Length: 45
Image (cartoon, rainbow, N blue to C red; front, top):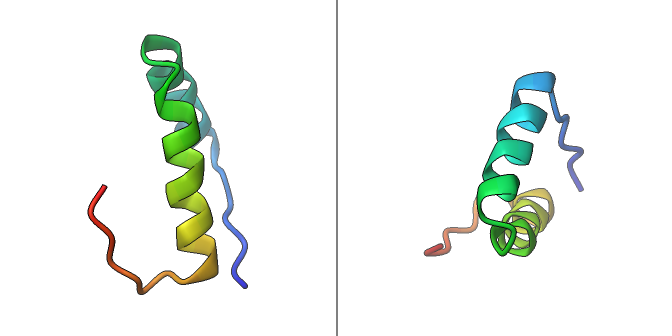
């Protein structure tokens, strides 16, 4: 399992996107979980 490091620029961008469209938060976390579990899997968002 890999560890994702959230730098300040990602946090700011994430907050900005979620503030504009709160429904995307769950989808972003789902994609990040896939990235952590298997970074080489290809899925269509």
